[in-house]
Image 1 (cartoon, rainbow, N blue to C red):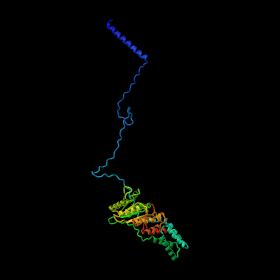
Image 2 (cartoon, one colour):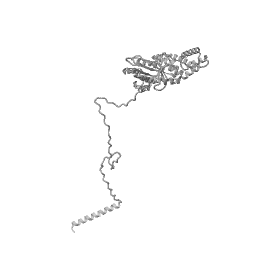
Image 3 (tube, one colour):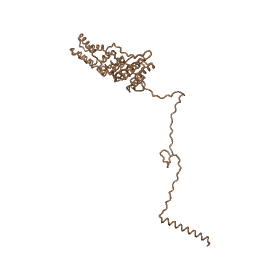
Image 4 (cartoon, helix red, strand yellow):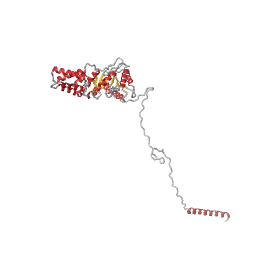
Length: 405
């Protein structure tokens, strides 16, 4: 064997020895071979983008949802260049048409008769006694005084009745009722002018100022009066000059909307009532209205500052022309307290007529006589209920008939 062959054999032997030593060293060191790595599945590229709720790593195989196609409404015709846009306004309810005042009188007389029948029945019972002595006539006078008819009118009625009954010598109920009716009609005074001055002047509307203390129903009276005038085919403008009560202007505007008449009001509470009243009359002039009704704030008659302010309202309104009517609203249930109110208001604003409210809720209808005697002005309107049409012109004979039956 040659030298080259011997070198090759030696290299092979050394390689085998080294491999055996390495295997033995691994076994004695307790090193175990790692298990083969599991084969991972191939990651496929996603065929769609993940949607809401999809797993970002493992997208679902279901196909993606499509977008529903919704038909859009047709676009409106474009407006002409420069033409203002016309917003859609809901149709306003048709204004109410109040029934004529004459159609309400029968119902109102019935209510008045129910509330004042005790007065007439009591008087007739006294007058029908077998003996009309001094004590009986005193009871008659007391009954009249309890009805707030006033001392002087009560004395006049008793004196006149006593003389007529003595002369006629009658105890017949029908004759006594007729005598009592005549005396009551006389003291209520049918000769007084009770017509409302609401006729339009040549260049301006008639102006009606409504005044009174708190709680008498001024705003409601203005609204009801507007209904009466609309029923007479008059164009009316309302002025909300009660700027101190937050809901007064809203209440008056609601009344106006019901009968289809405009309301002039201030945008802020506590505004100058004289300015609002002035604007209302000016609006009535511009609109060529027939009547402007001005509602004023309620005020106590013993508050000098408030009464002075009421006088200012009237003076400012009169810059457009004289005020045609100043209506004082009185609560018939207040009795003689209303008399003092009437005197003070009359001194400040020159009252031309009385509106008696709640006359159906009292047996003291004699306040009609008392207030007319005290002020020398007539009762022109009476309120006989809470209904929208329960305001009517005052009629002397209808009032007396309701009392005596």
